[in-house]
Length: 186
Image 1 (cartoon, one colour):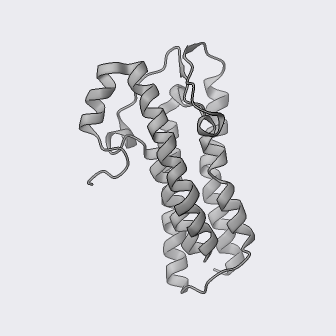
Image 2 (cartoon, helix red, strand yellow; image 1 turned 180 degrees about the vertical axis):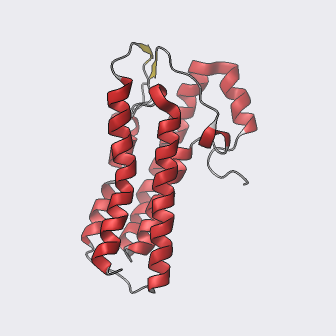
Image 3 (cartoon, rainbow, N blue to C red; image 1 turned 90 degrees about the vertical axis):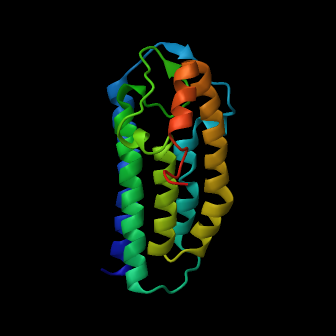
């Protein structure tokens, strides 16, 4: 696989998440709000914004030479991370939303990837970025992941946890005690 094919494969992996978000938005349709989250706009619209560092790295202003084996491992990690994030989105079904609002009919999902970690979508996105860093041989993406994606993800998780505690009370508190936020065995 040449360099161009690797970049295309990484980009296609990212589309698992983008297309899932779009499809779920269409399937979900319009619903009445039960709780409107009051987090700042950049935290509310985390999913699309977190991909900006990837776009910068895809242009590849500079790269390091890595072995093809490391690049293929990165592609596998990126694709697995994107698939895990998409699985998490589809597991939410009609409860999925880009914003952190809670809608009528919203349910606390604790099955599928949510039985492994409380925030599988975010774990998948971070894994995607780490894998893409290797596949694209991009120190810029590594820096953006460490300096932007990871802290931004932590902010989003903290804000989302507040909303979920408010919406689901003791049910969410029990879930928090039972399931780790991002790393299942840490």
